[in-house]
Each structure stands twice: as C-alpha cells, then as structure tokens.
Image 1 (spheres, rainbow, N blue to C red):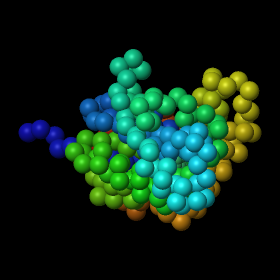
Image 2: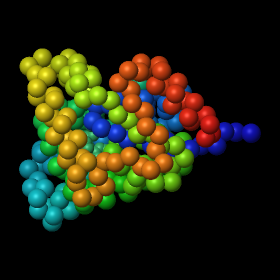
Image 3: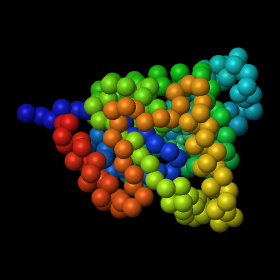
Image 4: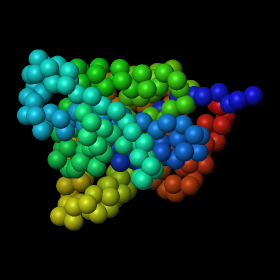
Length: 226
Ligand code: DC
C-alpha cells in the first residue's frame, strides 16, 4: 500500500532553523517545501519598491491586486525559489532592509488573508512541508504533524549572523540581535494569528542538536503518522 500523504507544519521563532529542517524533511519524504515567510518578504519588497503606504487599507488592497506569487524549482540551486510578478526574488528578500519591515507588513489583516488563502491552496493535495509562524494554528489547523521549534537566542543570533555576514560583511552582531528580538516580539504580539505553539504541536529545542539529530527525530515523528 502506498504511504498516505500528510501536511507537516513547522512554526517557531525567527532563525530557529525551521527552513533547514523543512527542506530536509521534504527531500527525505519527496514532499514539496513551502517557505511561507518568503511570501511575506516578497509582499514587503513589493510595498517598498512601489512606495505603498501600508497604514492605508485601501492602498494595501489595491497593491495586493497587483501581486502574483509563485514558487519555482530551480534545478541549479536544487531548491524551490520565490517568484514575484515573474521575477525571481529569492535572494533579494533576505536583505536586512526587508527583515526590518516584514513583521509590520505581516501583521496587516489583509496581507495575511491574501497569503493564507494561497498557502491553503498549495496544501490542497497534501505532501507538503510548510514553515512559518501560524501554519499549525491558522493555515492548517488539521495538519497531521505539527512541529514547533525553539533555540536559545544567542545561538539563533550566531547562526543568522554567519549567514548574513557572507552577503554583507558590514553587518554587526548587534544589528542581527536587535532585528531578531524585534521580529519575535511583533510576530508574537500581533492581533491576527500571532506566533504561538499549537496545542497539539511537538516542540523541538535544537540549541544542542545537530542538523542530523533534529532530522532523525522529525523523521521518526513523521513515520509514526504516515
Ligand atoms: O521565516 P521568515 O523569517 O522568513 O519570516 C519573515 C517574517 O514573516 C517573520 O518575521 C514573520 C512573518 N511570517 C508570518 O507572520 N507568518 C508566517 N507564516 C511566516 C512568516
């Protein structure tokens, strides 16, 4: 008998390694990986480029009508990358300029409805691993496996700093720490779908885990359900 396809959600704080685990799990299981944070980042990029005043609901609604977001598998990088209105923005959206604004944009009700509807559509056929902040609570409350990731702030800052330093050697540890703390605060205190652990989510604290250990544990959890 063929294994049943499920939805796996991975939520948690910024820079906990959610996307690393999600990508590895998707690869092991032959599932599609969807980076929901990339969608909020792409919307933020569009708003910044087009000088959209996101405190004005009418302007936000108008702008959203002009946004099309897709994911496309890139054979070269071996990962699915985000396409905003036909342009590959996978790398541009990782800039600190976007990171500094994305939590404000992601807190807007209209933006969330827009993104959540597309995320739910992407999960219709199951066989999906999606990471974010509200995937187990709002996007797929019926998901078969929900993981909530945490890690010590010092470790998270160190990991994100290393990643960003490669692209921008002018960045400081302080800037990275301030940005992570600010995003965690806004993401967990907003009115619509704040970041929280779903009651039925399994917590993984990966402060002292290697990537291999964390993958093995998550695969064990997935196998039990599948
Ligand atoms: O996962 P990330 O750091 O790329 O996400 C960028 C921001 O988008 C994050 O600060 C909060 C927001 N986000 C969200 O509100 N809901 C999601 N499902 C995913 C991300």
